[in-house]
Length: 328
Image (cartoon, rainbow, N blue to C red; front, side):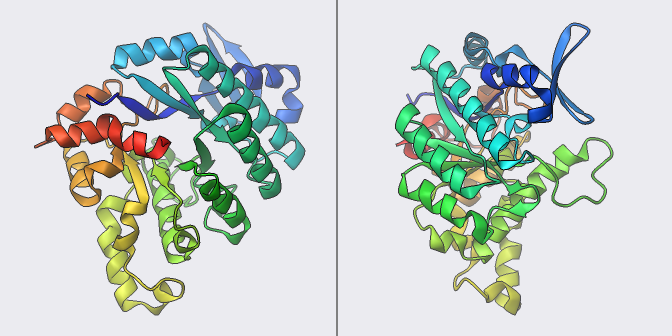
């Protein structure tokens, strides 16, 4: 039986939180105690600091409750720090990566780490990427789907993508802001709709810009079941066939790129996961919990069992075989 591997599990490590408390102006954030809970606060956005964000023992205890064997931990969006000046952004990324490495070292059979990068400075991002691979042995790296509104497909970031590919690492892309702003301010829609939409916009740009052709070996993991991509990829194809704008940089249908991506199972609807498997293949689907945020799946193994017509082979791929292929 394959190990149950979670590829979408967030942390906000202690070294980073300690640095904020020591110098909030430098990192443009504060750590605040409000009643019985601690928060990381930036502007009007306050995120409660569940202990599993920064305590490796608590993270593993939560994994045990969820029936997970391994989590590949990645920085939560409050720790991306792309909005900081370049020097502070690099310092933040190094603190986060140090903290992730410390958590992994305390539970090396249960936790693996993803690097975070100071993407506002691509040269510094490449240097930090190479450092984390050499010093910590990270096999994956996380970036935002966009960097302060600039999409990952931008030529500015192409050297970073090529370096990830050359190092044999896999890329986990995660939204943190809404590129499309209209109508997102109410009802927490910036997360319900904005995050999946940001992923969809990123994928479209990676395909239509030719970025995936430039990096033919790059493996990319998409959270939240791939956003709207699995359900609208046919519309991309139709647009490619009838619109000259879509044919500027690529010569094949967008659906031919769909298996360049891996997709977590976090759709919150079993029928949607069934469609994801049918469209992309079970060998491109992985467990993703989004723990410990409140939008997480709090019983991921049971959720997968609710997927219609799930075969034993599909279950094996999603539980761990797909993730093992990404992790090498």
